[in-house]
Length: 448
Image 1 (tube, helix red, strand yellow):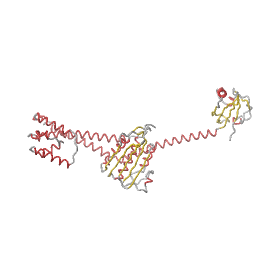
Image 2 (image 1 turned 90 degrees about the horizontal axis):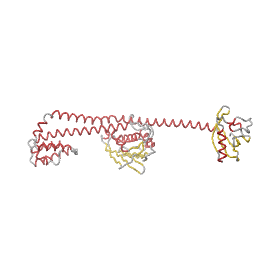
Image 3 (image 1 turned 135 degrees about the vertical axis):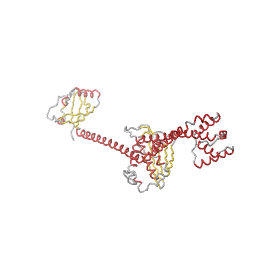
Image 4 (image 1 turned 30 degrees about the vertical axis):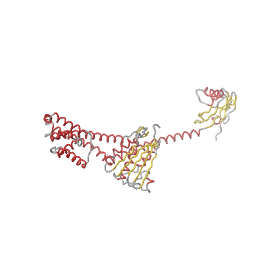
């Protein structure tokens, strides 16, 4: 162990007693008595050192600091302690700490390397999550394409219906309205207003029952052609409170008036279909945009858990409608969670994808989101075959999968677990024959 060097200095920084272990300064053979402290330093302002000595003497407080000297052409580090020895003298104790400084420098460098490695690992993990997300989207793309083509087809068909109506009827409409009496014109527009009102979609069986009921009412009023008139009223969407239309229905031109009203009602329905299909397509595009987004800011934001789940459900709509009943149990007034929404979407994607596959796209999928104390708990339960007990301990292992080649990378649940842990959350699984339940518990935070 290197011996410390002791210097006794007066108020002006002069050496009063022969220092010990002067070899540490590279001056073992010199008589240093009456030299000033500035002798040991290559300093542009030697007054700095005796000012420190004066400060120690004035305040009577010990002063600790590190400094370096050039000794034998190399840098040597010292830890110094200046303390009061007498009224006008201090003792300066210096210890060689070069080895410690080297160790600190090496440790600092190693920490920097570790920080860089951690940053690279985090970047790689983000890329892996994005890659897995895109892989899942690739498996969904056929269904998503169908979900987009369906509303586009509905729009195309509705536009064609509207165009056909105007081409076939535009010339006849002026003459039609000229023939109508004021009373019949009022009845005609009343038919259109009633047809535009929202009504429940009836099944084929219900339509037959309603048609018979309307027909009986018309026959009771001795209205001719009750059967065909009942069909037309049903097509227009008027199945209740038809008594106000009895005068119209008794008119000898009632069939022509009803048929024209039906054509106008078809145009109205076509515009509704276009609006509905447009909303559906916009919802799918928004879900795709939200799902595929890659936020590189690395910052958490406040987000609603159920919004993310709904985004993923939209993308899986094609698979779900094959035979899956979705039961949603969303709590009221759920608070937002400080999170990485894009990464949580990957959690919901993997869990929902696994659940649908486990059921073969046929069964009951239950999604339960509720607040428990300071957490949001999301449970996804399927009615599939369950996870065999012998493989349960391995389901979170990277690259472990029981799926056929090409249907899974074995990274899904591993990624889910890492994302949940990144959010300081918990992931639990329960399984039995006919039921598997994954629960994600995330802390409610508004700031880090």
